[in-house]
Amino acid sequence: MAGGHCGHLLEVDLTHGTISRQALPAPEELSMWIGGTGLALHLLWQRLRPGMVAHDADSPVILMTGPLTGTKVPNSSDWVVV
Image 1 (cartoon, rainbow, N blue to C red):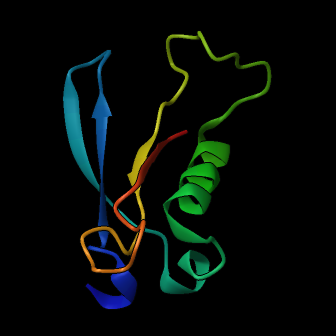
Image 2 (cartoon, rainbow, N blue to C red; image 1 turned 180 degrees about the horizontal axis):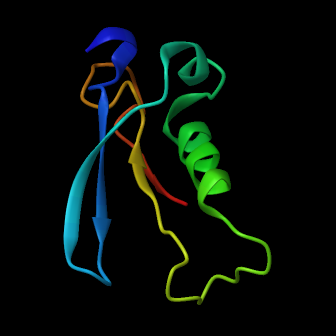
C-alpha cells in the first residue's frame, strides 16, 4: 500500500454488466492530485467528452475514498461521489 493507495481501481459498467480492475495512474501522477476527491476529478476529466451532460447514459459516476481511509487520522474515512 505504498503512498496510501492499494494500487487499483474497480470499474463497474452497469450498461454491459461488466467489472474490471484498473491500475492507478503512475505515482508521479498520483502525487499531483490531493486525496480521493482530486484523483476522482482527474479520472472524471479523462472520461468526459465534448457535449456530455450529466444524464447521458455513458456519463461516468465515480465513488472514491481517500488514501487515508481506514487510518486513525481524523476525518479520513470520508468518501466522495464525483
